[in-house]
Length: 183
Image (tube, rainbow, N blue to C red; front, side):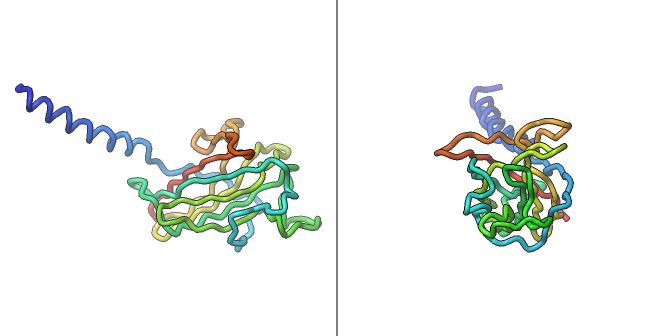
């Protein structure tokens, strides 16, 4: 094989490998339980607990909503999130009086790049459940996905649903991408 042909083949392999690697990484996010505390029609707000009454540890969550088969960013996807406060209690359930400035629920739309972001407080644990945030994600032409974001791998939780929260500018920050299957 001559030198020029070898260089051409090596250069071509450089372009092929990333596509193959990308295809391996593009997987539908695992489903998880809806849970008993989902309420349709959560407010459209990027701040789930503006008053701060749900806990003192601030958390910023961001990510992308992607679509199969090639992990295309999905603009305009609906990301519904809800969670417990630092004590492990949910709002809008039971007899307790809720703080309207801290409902710990939101409906968000992704941007043109498929990105979403919200600010909240770190959820607490409650009996039998590790810290988590519930997600219900939908987009036209894709199957609605119910899943959860966890902060520690325990009790058989799939690794794809676990993220770490790292300190950033006086708060914690976490990233969670969601990939939807075609309908």
